[in-house]
Length: 443
Image 1 (tube, rainbow, N blue to C red):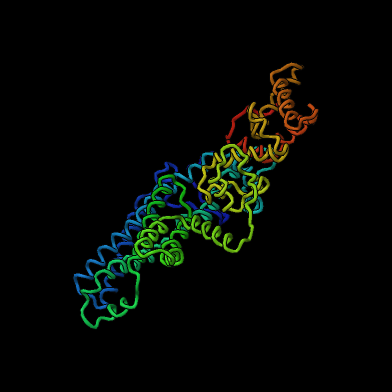
Image 2: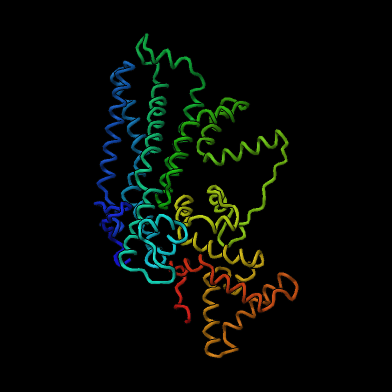
């Protein structure tokens, strides 16, 4: 990819350059879009508040208070997204583009987008250098795929759902305490009088709002916001009151209000886990958690394993079979970290759980094994039989034998396994992605 910052116009229909391509090259985005979106949201919110006040025949002062509070709540919830689509999205895009370009991008398309890349004329012959038109097409195709999977416009439907929920709940929170000032015979006054437990409801809504806005700001700051998060936020706001009712029925009124706020401030997946534990305890299902293979990888905590499992990745083979770009996007993990996990998973796949012992000499991931095999190959071509690479290979044999507590595996077996790891196609992708730069293989 001779010019990765540009997006040439192609005739294959897969990619067309847009006006924001220069902004992408600099990673600065286009702040005009955020301003326009903010103005549109503010206008729609003001128009909705006016229509609600007119339709319900609210007094001017009450309508103005409800409209002002609602406008503030909606804009506060929307502002992090406006910042994200202007700048954070482009920063995230550059993270992938800095790793996948040239040979690395070609290998990525071979592995995970073969048919589409072939149709677009973006594939190079395996083992042969790509022509410039092919690399340009590959760059454009990757941007198209990335925009389809994680485009900024994909955030619009869930954001509208979230803001709609915030709009109606904000009006509800304002109108309930002030319902006494409504004129006699107002339809809204009679409607609100049918509801009870206002304190509990408002507490649950405010707790959920605090969580949603706080978590959004945190994810935008870390540049890991994804579309699924916004759908979860909308669901969290909509279910705040039902969840509070379900989990505080047996509590005293004063305690229930406080607990409702705390429950609202919890992520919905945490609440689901609590409900599962409660149901398992009540029904005595005896359901036990299965050991997690991914926790054995260096750098994987319980929280990271939960993020991976949420994307359907709970084993080593699943980690090797999933598109690493989509995995990084959907989990919010950094792309380099995902590649690091893949490198470890390759070694685990070929050597099993005994591979953890190799971390002591820096051979826990596929790229390190690849570099060792290249050093060993060069040493043998030079006729050396006592090179540093041979000594490291001997150490690796001893470490693996200490795990098996036997004379197995022997030197020949370990070299064969390491050779398979080095020749593994995914290892080639990791090396070309610049994950671990090394000299070209010896010819």
